Image (cartoon, rainbow, N blue to C red; front, side, top):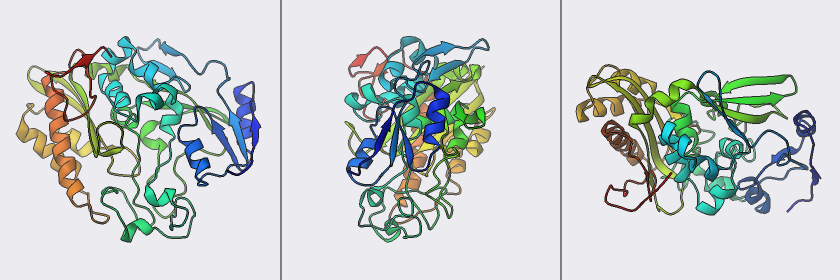
Length: 352
């Protein structure tokens, strides 16, 4: 591991100033960053430890009915908060399906939002990767690419974003508060991550030194709580990134879908909001036929980036099943295998 300077600032402005220096990186739980440093993939000159900054580890209700979640709130603490799980069940389900229990106990909200978009070639320093080393090429294009992107990819990069948490956040119009050198601003989670284009090394809309200080869910997000699910298909249920995942949230009135919110994970370099599918469902009766039409609309622009054409049909089926589960109603408790297609009402349950 490369040697580095370590700084523990006392205030948010001090942290922003320190992290704005070239070669700096923020450190919270480090569940992603430290792995990359140990492998020689990330080589920062300076770590800016934000774990002692005041006011970043609280959850508070907002006057408008929304919820503000500090960037240092632990994933497990948020997912297991009963009030949070009742109001935003798809988000809690996504959190509990991500990583392992040990990692969820350490990982933070802000860190999850900013984990690196990556694939096996990104981790291999001997492979060409434009995201890790701009201009070197993308060995995944002609390599092992069955798990790679089918939406929004470019010739420069076909990796997928790994977060489960971000998928329902994008569907529910969540925003982040960002502190930067010019002050504080608000940014939609949907706009936080960038598609690769010709510059895949530019992974987010953040500027050097920018610090996510909080996540906010709008009051409207809780209106979907009665019909909201997250479904994740992975190669092993215990601990793996999604091959494909889907967040489905419906507002059902008088037997019709008044509003739908949909997003896909595991299909692009960012969580993918399926707005065309939402439009298909507006005013429709919740039925398999309507869900299939929505799935077709969601994947209309999908194309294989390699040996992964199967992911397009898989994504359609996952979305149909997520919609079917959401239409049936949010369960009172989270299943012991959150978001897994192998969960069932007859299985073991635990309180969220």
